[in-house]
Image 1: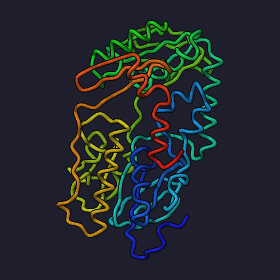
Image 2: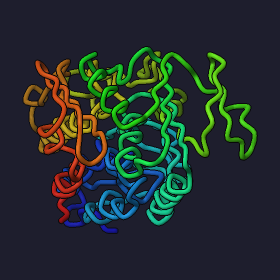
Image 3: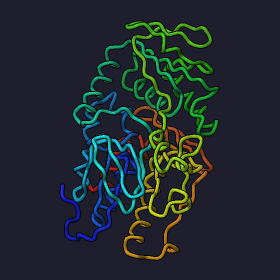
Image 4: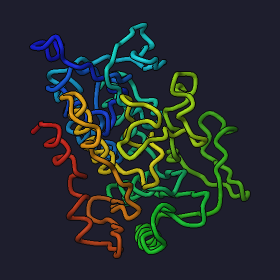
Length: 361
């Protein structure tokens, strides 16, 4: 795919990672630079729509988007980045891609398949797994585990759902009011919620339907879904020129302009950053907007003091869906459940809004 060939002097921008942050900034910069997006997969996925797609696979047709559909003027390299040098990125398939500006948006390490077709097959496979199980165990009481329990309880109310969480309450990144409203709703849908326990999956025999917990309980279930946090995709960076910029938790340390500390032309956005805020999709989009503006200023020869700064927010808005007809929302000074948060998110999970942002119908 040709990228910005009308100017041989176009600055080279490389974006590593095709998740929420990386895809949005790649789209923003494709007509003002010679842009290359490096991603192990050929598609961008709207992550907050995944759990709905597990109970309604056709939903993924709109939420799993080919990079080429929104990136019409950029180069797409479907491979992993394995090294960052002073002015180039090395990929697993042996390429060296030169850059004037680099944006790292590698997020979390997700073992997703390379092709969109294979990803859609996974959603169908998850759906068949849910459909064929009379009892389902969900491990993890964060947003993913809670939302999956909600989707299954809503679409398959006859199934027995058990949710086991290692903490003392659900949704620990939110306040206790949101956690209580969520727990009450799950209990009302006959979801069995167990706290302060781990599930031992390492010794699970093939085809076994008995799961033992750290407190000695035996849970019988036809299938299970593991919904715990994924590791950051930063391990590879520790062996690169940016190794000293990775903090103890595996995040890249950034300054107020979202440049990696000590670097003039390398930025980081999204979940990989060390910003002290909740890791949310809409905040990743805000990171992308700030860095896109800053790179455009630098490309045009503008002064660094005109660059935008990003201020982390300690009062993020969070909406956790509970099936198609309910949700819990935590606003800075208010926690709600019912119609309002449902009308904001639950109907199409912001898929239409996100597609519009990416220039798609």
